[in-house]
Length: 479
Ligand code: ADP
Ligand code: MG
Ligand code: ZN
Figure 1 (cartoon, protein in one colour):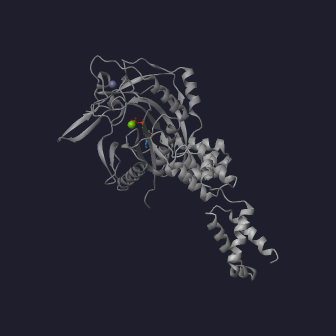
Figure 2: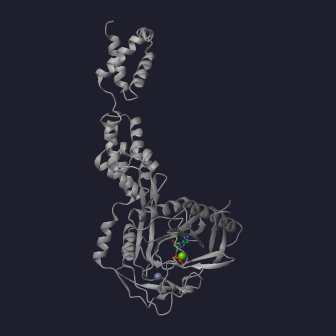
Figure 3: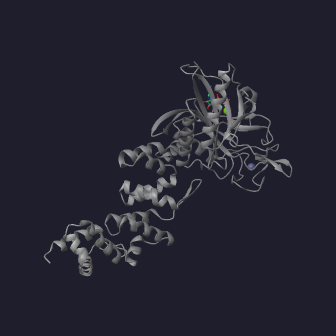
């Protein structure tokens, strides 16, 4: 019988910190500028320059580490990671090595309606490299706008056991970082990406196999596919009696294949040493406590609370908690109109349709106050659910408009004035004696005919239940 293998997976996630400037200089980190427009002697690595730490980046890093359950090392050390690559102007990357600013965390991850916990080894600060551009007038060129961009690297424990778990973990980390305002989650622009380490071991073994590192994956779909492809490749090697080589591979989404980039360096290949240009990073208790107070409720516990306290479905809670802008919108409506299920239904089906998201920004076509007012009109039976959608469209077309005013101006209010409906009905009964006779003869389905006629006469604003009650009463009356 063939050996069954268990995959062992650990992710190293690189997340850009939501600062305005770089980690060790004042250059802007705006995306999309002309190549080499956001550079200075420091991030170009010119001789004689000195780095100076960006305090905002440190604070955001601390907030992220706390949200990921890590403990903070109050005196940590920046180290130089030496390697030669064209997009690395100094010939080394400033990172943290032996003494990172945080470690020993954990994260609760949702998968298929249940949750599991994954360990976080460490979170450290480091700078990003630049970007090689190929095929520029037949040559390769380098854009150093990204060089020096502040990142946190989140090194996960090798706790993941399937590609689905890995993708769910990556999703959960991104959601947390966005929820606390540390990262904009923009995967296409490279501000959130990961390296996936994959190894196999015989089912039941407690030792790890040799791992392969899959570099720079920037989508949930690709991380899952790349890992599946790598598991299949390693399985074939092991089944054939071979040995997996420790190496770094790249994943090509267009062919769904991985290919060797380089044989994996060990830490000693990087000749790490403490950066002599930077003092130890001191993080005081006040900073830690301030950042802790800014973490707030995290997406997974929030989802569970929505289900437990507010009776939302898991799927509803999930979608609402995917973006901090949606959470804020939903809870703002709820603060004005506390009917969680009704608000969730309306936000998920009607409001999200007109919403636009870019990074941490969310733009809605209506305001929470307008939605609350609209739902109150439905609740007090002033308008029907169907009319609420029409009013929503009118509010969207006229930003700032009051749903209540629109309903009044357009005479959209449900006609629940029994007197008005009764006189319409009496008129209809006189004009349709045959239908009246049919109902009297027991054909109750003809009631629908009258309800329909009244709806028509009132432009759909009559309360149908009231109409059929009135009709029953009128028919019961002696002729
Ligand atoms: P490096 O910094 O050289 O990449 P680390 O030991 O820091 O190496 O590990 C990096 C990542 O690799 C971590 O996310 C860890 O969980 C994962 N990892 C370590 N060993 C294995 C293994 N045998 N199989 C799968 N993943 C592993
Ligand atoms: Mg690594
Ligand atoms: Zn600079």
